[in-house]
Image (cartoon, rainbow, N blue to C red; front, side):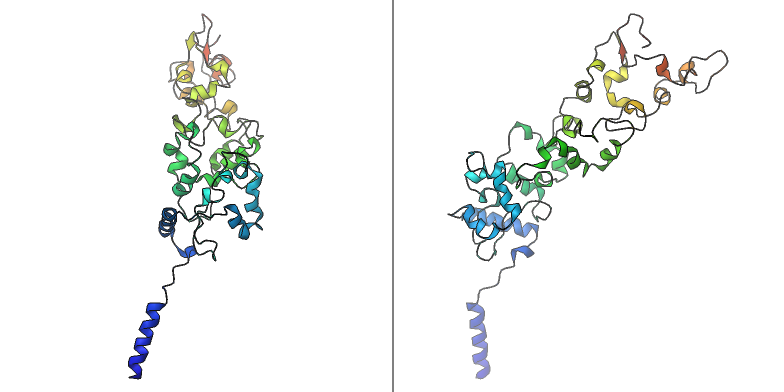
Length: 312
């Protein structure tokens, strides 16, 4: 009898006591996204807006820094703080403020959410033509999140400062960083030129996310004297600057991919002095200084009537 009563009482306790939900900090990425989707469907936003969030988070200097930048400007109609406030980016509050039992959308390296999910929040506002090629960009395909480069909770986003752009890019693009410190390079290590002068980090319709339609147009935007058209054109120059030059830096002069004359010999076969490494009896033109450019100084193209060999 006593055993029967105990069993019935235990059953009653199990029925009455609610099952304990898994703490949201223990949820994996898929479970977290599912929970957030449910919260958005319920749409339980706070009636007090940011005031509800700041009851707990106001002592966090990083959180409060949002009010120093454009995203926290209450007077701007384009600012999320002038609309749904914190919940515009982090999602509906729900019961999060009741002991933090419910998740919010998090950003950055510590977020369990996928880069695609994080970025979808940013793209809710940032969907102008500058981002039109984002979905096909290398950064998107490599699952780079906006928050990996940008800082919203700041007076000024560091990556928007020209003196910080190169540091941000080279934190991932380490090979480019090594190249820009070689003896021949663009003035990037002194921040006189930045990565975004040539590339679009949000993607473009061109190869390597170039701002211009082609590599030659990108180079010619600064090196206008190499643009042409010329009376006598050097085919590799007109086709692609990278046939001879490397953009980020080289151990050779003028960012050349190889030293002259070895660079020239990659196209010019043995047809006389044009490919001999050492002087030969009766053939001294090539050995004079060991460089084709000693004579063919107009190698990018010539407008002289007698410049077919790029010597004038």
